[in-house]
Picture 1 (cartoon, rainbow, N blue to C red):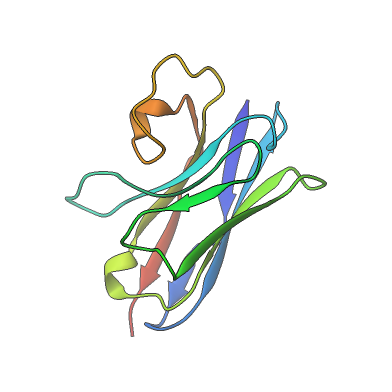
Picture 2: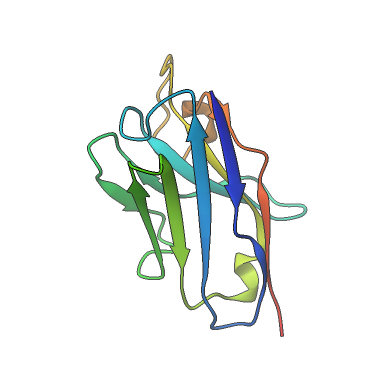
Length: 125
């Protein structure tokens, strides 16, 4: 199982960015996948998740601004981010629940078994 994020970068406040999470070793429609972020000095925060049947949910901090989706042909999950704010600056990770031995909710990293390496998103003018 491997997850590889891409698409991070520097964007101005109010801008948009799309992150990709390419999966290998499993199909993205087989397991739930979540998006997390961690800013320097802060705890990891779950921001979005998509279930194996394609139902998405979002943390209040990003609801209405972020959208997660997937392309099964490309075996990739996306996080489209709009109206970005400086406080969205963080390393963003995708993760998958491939074993599911414990459930702490869709936005708790302890629920997830496999993680990507992360991609940096910086929102600054």
